[in-house]
Length: 330
Image 1 (cartoon, rainbow, N blue to C red):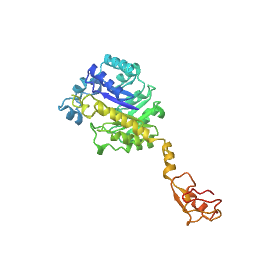
Image 2: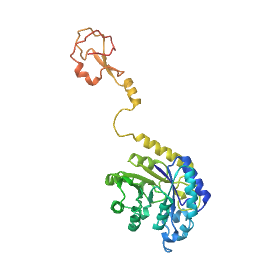
Image 3: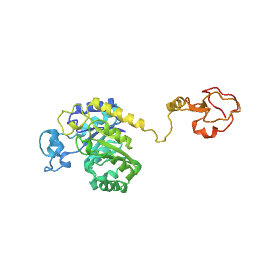
Image 4: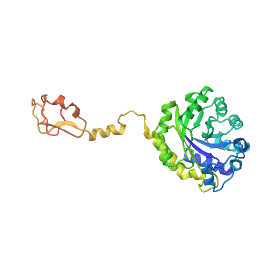
């Protein structure tokens, strides 16, 4: 399942939001996700910006001033939800407080996405657990004990493991290869045994392929129309052509995984007849002659007796005449 993360990249603009939904649809995403918050409920007036936000915006201001420009009104939520329905793609939004969460549930979201910053927010997690919906839990900035604590709160509140997906994440925008720690995808699966995914803030498609190879069943990736647009997340987001390739690459990686059973594919079964060998006559062999290393060898194709039965054949007598290169029968 691929989530196209619009987040706040709509910049508070209806038309931009709809265009980003179009991008998600055209690129083959399953879900398009926004963020739902009211700035003064999310941050105090004294909360500073994160380092990446200062860098990406090229200016320093309070979080609350930055966030106030990026809020989605209730009207915008309704319009964007209806537009998603018209485009046959699932609408999702991340709530950053209890009031916003209630609003989204009333709006009819199918699942709840818990952002990394709320993993250590006990009352918020209890509220999430009470809604009776599947939960996707991001774990950026967290160590394993913090993930255990967050999961325990959700489970205690009634969330079944079968309804929980945990996303590995590195909360840097963009995240550099050396800090991705992709093996944590496997660690999370071994620890919790539920569906595991990856919230991808890296550049390129490589991390997605690694995540899928390690067992991720959900990928989340920020999208934008242009990385140079004003806003805190555009620089770490993918433009349409790149995101289309990202989805294609992820789907290919998932298809390539198979079922894990070591067996030949249908194409290989045909190839095996061509490139494997059979036991054949090294020279003409007369009826009654004893098979030996002097008159037998192995050659392609593999339609005859397998060389793995070599010791079963050696010492037996020929039941008829064999020409050189003819497959042996016993």
